[in-house]
Amino acid sequence: MKKLFALVALVTSLAFAGAALAQDKPAASTEAPAATAPAAAPAAPPPPKLDSGDTSWMLISTVLVIIMIIPGLALFYGGMVRNKNVLSVLMQVFVGFSLITILWALVGYSMAFSEGNSFVGGLSKAFLSGLKPDSLQGTIPEFVFSAFQLTFAAITPALIVGAFAERMKFSAVLWFLGLWLLAVYAPIAHMVWGGGWIGGMGAIDFAGGTVVHINAGVAGLVAALVLGPRKGYGKVAMPPHNLTFTLIGASLLWAGWFGFNAGSAVAANGSAGLAMMNTQLATAAAVLGWMFAEWIAKGKPSLLGAASGAVAGLVAITPACGNAGPMGAIVLGAVAGVVCFWAAVYLKKSLGYDDSLDAFGVHAIGGIVGALGIGILAAPALGGQGFGGENASIGAQFIVQAEAVGFTIVYDAVVTYIILKIVQMIVGLRVTDEAESQGLDVAEHGESAYNS
Image (cartoon, rainbow, N blue to C red; front, side, top):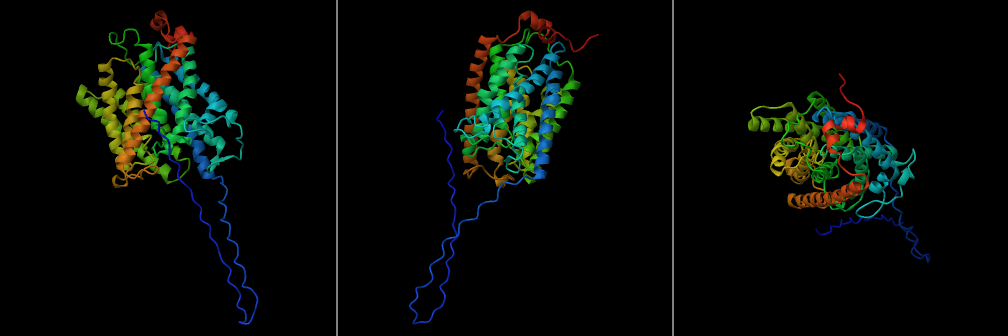
């Protein structure tokens, strides 16, 4: 793939000069006319000022996204595994969130959001250096901005857990998530949001279609392929052990996602309001899309399908929520529900990979639908808010979106594979056959979720 470099827009400044009029003098006067006054210097822009409303909304949004992860994602995933592995999934999400929190403060934030090159930031903000209570990012404290971005960095690796659930060593999970944050997430976040080339060419990713969902889903597929399927996959029934947990988790994800999407406006303004409305509409449409597709294909609509459809809609609208119009959001959600149903049920079966909880089928596929879809739906003629950067047509925007998606997939897949091989050499990846049969709760953590 050819390397793409962002074009930097030229910023010009205009100086307004005033000339002093010469005083009227008698005709016989030999005095020279008054000298022209020097040009007035342009007024300096006012310094950024903290906005308490924006700050309050971003504090709330940060907490909402944390609730999405723990307990939301943990319960959503935990309910879908077998009862002998539920604690292992909860541990991977809960402890993984804690690990990413520390790594983000040490180097992750700096790599994603400090000044660097087109591909990755530098280390000028490592250990949160330079951040003070009065440091601002726009109209909010930079500490709040960093904490908000931390939640995105934390949920993305946690999503990958669903692809290799029930078979990876806990030690390997921690090594993998930590290395993946630094080698994949931080660079992609910088390229899209931190001043890198993907954002510079006008790619639209309002809240994380490429950075979060395609990134996580592709990494999950690679991990599932490297580890191989679970014992008995395709031969032994592996139904979810507690769909009540799954629905509660999906509901927490739905509610918390308003912080994820509307919070990405980084202000309490109309853009946040549009993102909120679009998130609600797309999610509801995706629930119906998945449900009716399953009803037609299998004869019965399932609770698991409805919950999965909700997540598919949330995923698809994420990159588009601030740029699509409300009617476009409904179309995008409905399409995502149907396409993700096909991917999770039929594509996975035809290709034979064991993506345990459909991280690829929902997050990568849904993210691709959203990232490409906004290339069309951003058009003002379709109710959108306009194209990104210097892109002036659907065709130009769609090409840029496709380039961003393609680069993310290739970069993510290659680096994820390398990380998995490194972890395999350090601690090994997969639990023993005996541990897998016994269940990871007891084999890896020495406890059971249900004691009777």
